[in-house]
Length: 268
Ligand code: HXC
Image (cartoon, rainbow, N blue to C red; front, side):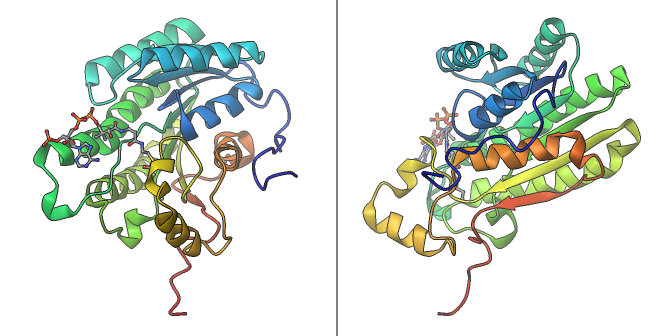
């Protein structure tokens, strides 16, 4: 392996998601795109949702060029009407909906006492409300269909450890963890599994600015016992496992993929 986690082949059999349809929010870039690519590689048809149509189109074309099936659907997850349209578009295109991946997020580092109302709302509306709007719309379709389904959200460990300078995101992600466990119990009777993946610092275009500064990079790497950033492919592997039939008895779980980052809080 040339780079840890960077060039993994899938561990799941080809065709794991054959004839299935997934919506991936935040699917135009970063961790969302990595998950969408992996689901498509395993035979699933993926609907990429996000705010930037151009980026989604490019991502869908790349998945198509690699032999997968993808549809781009510009959507602001903060707008319930647009979310309903997204689910309608997925059903019209793919004929069914089996999976929802909530990867859309917004984040920036800020002192809590300096955070504006709009800044708070931008993040909480995207992460917490957006995840609920998408999950509710997808869940309704899955319940109506009667075939069950899977919901997978992307969270962060500061949801339970706390994380200075991320009060908006930490509060919202904590809500998503609570939503995951609540709906796992509530929707099990419909055959819907609800889980989350929890990446640590992952080498994506969106997150990289957080450690652009060499001093920040050094500090963050020192906080990760494994001594490196995660790769999007590693998150995608864990996500596809949780979405797959191999995880059929797992629900309400939060799978941490962070090289031990959240545990590494020793005194020395
Ligand atoms: C302070 C900021 C800010 C910043 C935005 N705001 N960025 N305040 N510092 N860096 C404030 C604005 O001033 C404004 O408030 C309010 O937030 C809304 O900003 P807009 O740009 O108008 O809103 P919007 O277009 O909705 O932007 C949403 C966003 C944006 C969250 C602010 O950054 C976004 O969508 N980002 C998506 C990409 C992203 O965040 N990726 C990071 C993922 S990586 P005022 O009061 O001025 O009107 C990640 C890694 C976590 O999360 C690491 C885990 C281990």
